[in-house]
Image 1 (tube, rainbow, N blue to C red):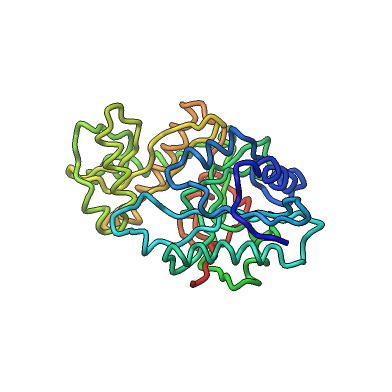
Image 2 (image 1 turned 45 degrees about the vertical axis):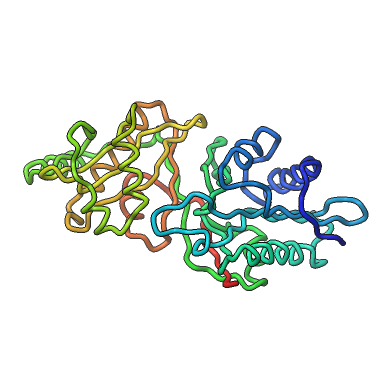
Length: 330
């Protein structure tokens, strides 16, 4: 058994290992080919193959592992304070329980340590996003896995090697042909309007202030999304709650992926205006905008204990998968 860095010439064997696990139903990832590998890995600014390793046995590749690190950072993030990300690991079924997976994982962790990483994680913050099929749907997919699928073999494997649940997230799904706009949502919109709160499509020319909301939420991610969308040369539709020239809630941008998925990035409401129904109206507006754009379905993931699940369920979403965000200290 020999562990070494992966080479471009290894890719047919790596794709075979990957795709065998996908087609057998062992994992929910979408199959890989040269085009998909280029799109998901090579064309992303955070991937360069540094953290790819294979296991050879008698000249055959019987396992591989791939990881990544962030190279583009949000304010406050650095190479030193961001973790190493475990992206995927596969071992040929007939070669399992021989220590190959553990040896591959050790090689990846050693490379992360050499790069100064203080922890290793499996999470949706991985800069390499892996799309996966939603079980029980006609080929509908989600554009990223939020962690380790608790129903796959990778979960007990990582537990065995010292990883622990940081928290869990559920993936939720809605076929948009089943979506219904409820009368109580419109009643909530009208009540908010009577209180001076507008909810709906946002006119970027208004140049409303949003830093206060982002500060109180504590999210540089939402600040960046709003900055990018409100200053773009050709801004996409975004949905907002506005009160006295301040953005107090936001979701969007409205976008339909080629797969037919309505792309949900999340929803943000200023804590000063919580529990008023702003999120309910904006989220339902988002579903209606998706339908206008021709989207067929929408997916999202959220914390297993997140109170927002109640909103998503009332809108028609159902839980389809549970993922663990797993972490190990270096």
